[in-house]
Length: 279
Length: 265
Image 1 (cartoon, each protein chain N blue to C red):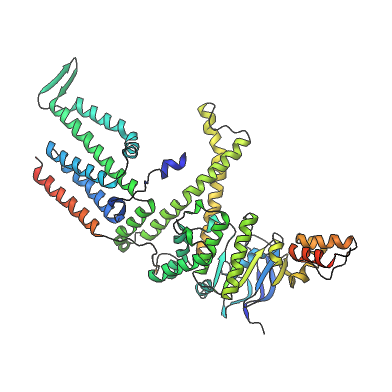
Image 2: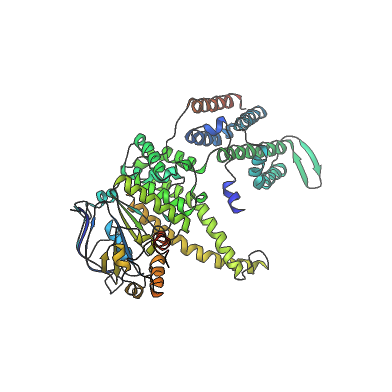
């Protein structure tokens, strides 16, 4: 039985200056150790979700539980220790003047003794392969490197959950791959739960489970394969489908048959050149 | 170009002065500024001169960097020199031409006050040339710590300073980007009459302003998400270490002060 680590029960949220509910009666669980992608068009409520999860905003009604703690004003600081966030803009979350200072920032806030801090900073930077850049200043780093430092900052606090709030959307393809590979390795190593809020469906395709948000409600929930077989429906929601799924579809229209939707180009290519030789 | 204006200041080198604790450097500069007023005759000025050049020698900073610091104030020094030269009366008349009269005392005061300026600038440039801005911030934070008792927000000031320092290069890069974008749209920053050029700065400043506010907001959210809630109960990662060399330097300044008191007329 999978253990729920974050649960939302009938959560609704409304911004003060808006009539529409940004989140409307949302209920779902996030399980320990999974990689969950929350996808949705702009205004679907996916970013609001991130803000609710670490208490930057509180729901108007409903209940959120993180690591067994009900989320409210009193538990917020304990919950933030368990739940690290990486934001969209690499520059606007870099607080320290150098790489090591930035990683230490969260530890300083928690009042970790200096000797342990030095140790944890080094350790976290090694994990994201940025330990060569201890004294580097942020303006000399690439976007992907800055995001890896941000991940190290989160990691140093030893959280149970990492939320990637559009963390790769401002990066070039190489930086994006760098960051995702880092998170993937860490997840495997530390049994972290990863929640990635994204509109990049190639990124979502690699998740264990996808939740599709639309107009503040959970529209669908399922494995990537299930979700991407929705096809037209996703496009109507303003989402795109991964290139390999599109390609499979195009092949099908040409008369080829496939047993499933291929979520990565590699899978599709392998399928094409191994089992289609007799064409 | 702009980057040099601010960051050209710190010159990395492996010297005794570079390795000093920023706290001792700040203390020394503060007292030096006071002590320099003790000098009032040739011997005492010579002493201060020797001290200053000794420090410069220790710092291994090439002369051209010091010259860079002196250049902007050279006119001010000349102006004070001339003012003292013509308007101080006393001693014997050494030069007379029409209404212009130069007295011995005037010449002496002119030279002394220019020298005082000169030494002050050299010593303060030495501080900024051998200490990174963030070290100065750390030094100030610890030195001003007692002010917390009177509710002076020392930690907040230091954090503000370090965040500003961290964002200066980022905003510079952004300025550069916006400038290029506006040039591509036909704005001319470098030519045309002055009035036009000032006007051209507006489409540069407004986007920069807007984005700075956006950055500030996002940064605040990120800081909160990382558990920042003020200076209370916070530990520090950066550490300052007071070495024997720092104590030696302080003693040296005390010796200088004693000599100045003894030798001044």
